[in-house]
Amino acid sequence: MATKMIRTVLRDIDPELLGYTQCHEHLMLTKGQSFLCNPALCIDDPTKTREELLRYLQNGGRSLVDAQPVGCGRDSEALAALMEETGANIIASTGFHKLEFYPEGHWIKSMSEERLSELFLAELSDGMFTGTDAEFSPIQHSARAGIIKTALDVCNLDEPYKRLFRAAASAQVATGAPMMVHIEKGSDPELLLRFLDDLGVRPESLYFCHMDRACDQIDIFFNVLRAGVTLEFDTIGRFKYHSDEYECALIKQLLDNGYEDKLLISLDTTRDRLKAYNGNAIGLDYILTAFLPMLRRTGVSDSQIGKLTEENPKRILSW
Ligand SMILES: [Zn+2]
Image (cartoon, rainbow, N blue to C red; front, top):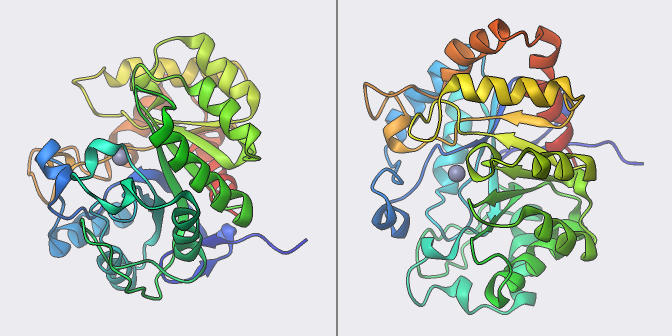
């Protein structure tokens, strides 16, 4: 069997070099439809983002995933430049987001399933397309995507989403690349899991994001975990949803049930939550500087923290 690697925007790296990783962040996000949905969904100053990233590295961060997919405000060229300038390992996303984040008439809504799948595959294998907005840009550059982002909406799997998920699943099966899923409050992650399973996507390649704010039924957590999916808790420091004490207790409960190999933690940053853009923000280094000490006080061991922040990202991002 060939050796596994992790595909960052600039180069493939040995998984052993990944180090401390947050698997769902936003470093750059161009001003477009997402901004119209929520003004905090615009992160467009490379100088500020570089400053944020350097603080993350200084406090022990090493790698991260930028979760903005193709044609949805992703700025692949800026991500490549940021990796070059800071030395952080940046993993970029192909795939799709919730349809509300695309304007009327966007190509992703009309492109055939087969072409979409080819597009995702090309971004993972050859290089990302530079277009960031409604116009599909055929210009491809050398920086590659290393993960497939997908999104489950409250409507679950109606035909438009089935088409998108089938295209993403086909690229996943062809490459073995990891797939992350945005889980929306009110959606049915177990239904999606069965749908993806039928398409040949193995649960071991999947992580479900936002589970700490999308779901408050512990049965669902356990069902999904038992099936082999990795869960990401990325609502840390988002106090409009819940406190960090709640977050720590939830993580501790799942750790106590033996799931230390199946959990990830991240911040899912927006403009408002990055210190370089907003002086009062928690910042990209918040987990390192504030949340991990709190987890330790909850009784989580250093070895378990190492799993959540290094071992599990390494395993899930390798292909
Ligand atoms: Zn996100």
